[in-house]
Amino acid sequence: MPDPGQVFAYTYHDPLLESIDESMKEFTSNMAVDRWKIDRIYQDQGNRQQLHQLWQDCRTESVAYLVVRRLEDLGDSVAAVCTCLTELESLNISLITAESGAEATVGRPLNSTETGDEGSETLQNSAGGQLQRLQAVQTYHRSQQLRRGHARNRIKALPPPGKAPYGYRRGKDRYLLDRSTAPIVKDFFDHFLLYGSLRGSVRYLQKKYGKKLSVSTGQRWLTSPVYRGDLLYHTGEIVPDTHMPILPPEEAAQVDRLLRRNRQMPPRTASAPRSLSGLVRCGACQSAMKVSRVVARRKPSGQKEYLYLIPVACPRQPACRALPYPQVLEQTIQQICQDLPPAVNEAALPPVEGIKQNLNAQISAKQALLDQLPPLVETGVLDAETADLRAYKIRTEVSTLQLKLAQLPPVNLKAIAQVASLPQFWLDLSEAERRFYFREFIRQIQILRDGEDWQIQLVFIF
Image (cartoon, rainbow, N blue to C red; front, top):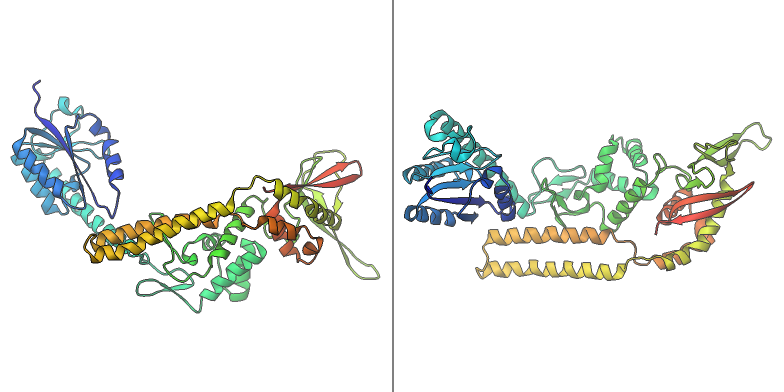
């Protein structure tokens, strides 16, 4: 069969909605494109210059087929698409739309041997099909126009559509603190930071303020960028420092550490009242040990409480005996005071200070780039829309760097270890405070038994 002519391809992408790499990946990975040897590809980004060049080349060269991702790429409106279809028909060029592996041709029809697909539709011969397709084009462009409007709002760091999150109200161009509800959200965060319990903080809000909150909503509050002064869009991109935060950066980093730590703990121990809950494991039977409370009644001095650590599921016969909670706590404090400083000194800790300086330097460099954009717009080097798009991308990159910075461990870990090696430090803490610091350093407390004797072995998190 003689060569019918060249095969051209055309791709268009809106820089507000997708990158050129994404559009080309979608185009080249399509099944229909793989069956065609494309001689030339024309690419447009936000304008139609290459499309005009395409028509000029089609008028002067022998072209048989034009391949596009979708029919909608040929214009920004139904009228523009129809103009392109008329031009193709006048030039006797077949159009191949290569979306979802389906093929449709406009102009000179293709037979099944040319396309390899007997189900290919010839829009030229189907007026009903062509009308239906153009209606789909109109719907697509309306959707794109709406998405483009949302994208412009994102670039300008405007809040997404919809009701403002609890604790905020909508302002002209940003979220503003709601004086009646923001203190409730702040109190929720403070309670979680003090006790480390999500469910307990949810119950606290309901008891103190009558604010009913599900646990899943409380979890979203703890991780939401909005309460940290940032905006999160449906694309997953975060723009930092867009409004006043309810949760400051230092407290947000502490919340993240608490959440990571709680995920490693057994269920229902994150908010347990006793500081050793969820940490102790029997070295003999490998069973976790729970805190059991016993109250002695009818004593002359009144009721007296006794606390024990008991294996949850000991398979041994006889079972491993329970241990007095106060003795295990005392031994744990003595052991951590003895073992913590050398463990910190010997640990292969990352160079936190150097990493922190490097991240801060990258953030400063990107902030400098942001400061350079307004002069470039004033001198006409950049148009306002391009500058806004560049500023948006830089801000999202800054947000990623700030997240990495917040996840770093404390720089002064050795200094903290020196303070934590003093017994009085632990004895002066409440159970809730002691529980917090135990879990900052200890992954597990193992009870090593030797007959009736036992001793403590600590497994640190580093």
